[in-house]
Image (cartoon, rainbow, N blue to C red):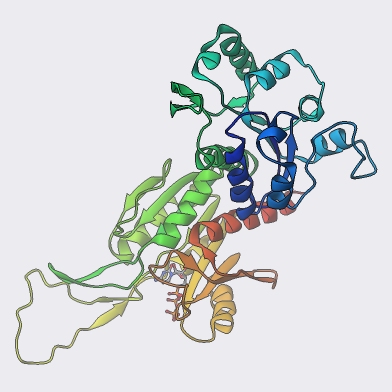
Length: 404
Ligand code: CTP
């Protein structure tokens, strides 16, 4: 979520300033660019050098020191950032933000930023509950400034109660939620997306079936990523242990034929269909009504082909955008291109399920996106959810190009 984002971290003078070093570290680990701005009081608690080392960027402490770039720094910094976080935020900075006082770098830059501001207050319990502080927080909330915490507990001054700065990870979670929401606004709102997931089960008798090793992880991650991006998601799922992502409607099926029926029925109203399910290619001709009894003879099981759902969708599609997956054990790219053409997919995601860190049941995958226009994109090993988010972005990008 935070990868590629530029975050301004304002540090004001409180003992919790030492925890902000961890915030910088966590933000950077997630791929964010961090610029730290410290008030003079903050530098009494932690040195600018610490933040400079952690952020790998200049640390801003004064409006009047030797410029680090050619332009007016507080304005150029304000224009670059995707979000600002003040952590810890003292009663003093809250009051300055309310009144618009700009007597140091941080309070000045905060007047110039046009992107969201988050504040994590940290102060003595009594100061936090003072009517002036409470009123200031109320005014900031009305201006759409997001207040994180404070948390409860033991305070450095010896008292107990609310006023502690929220834990770094809790603060990061709020930022992540914000950026996932903003993706939502940008990408898929109003779109209907159908995702299939899991391995179908083809019954032999009441207690046995032919199945495969698919767990549904990839398909559930795809459903989550589209839901995060604001789509109305229907997940047609074979049996799976995985929790249904919030906001996703589930249609539970078991066999390939059931999946075929449920997907085809819903297909006309969909904008996008992602076929992540591992569909059994064959089913037993006969489904025994009673449990087959053991004997010493070998058994022959006659199988008939199942309908190919993706191929049928490819034949019937009007405006719908179709994505298929191909799990391969050899020649993944050649097989992938061939499958893509045969099934008329707009994107085909190929993975070699024999590689460590890829395939069934793992949290990560190593995939290549093949596009109908002949392009291909190799992704490094990453979580299935991150792959799903990349897919959302690719489709959003392609759809916005076709609109232009
Ligand atoms: N698929 C489908 N219906 C089937 C079989 C597969 O919709 N009966 C879809 C899968 O959901 C996947 C894509 O087709 O998106 C490719 O599946 P895969 O099993 O890799 O390909 P197959 O066509 O079954 O080819 P093969 O088993 O020969 O590799």
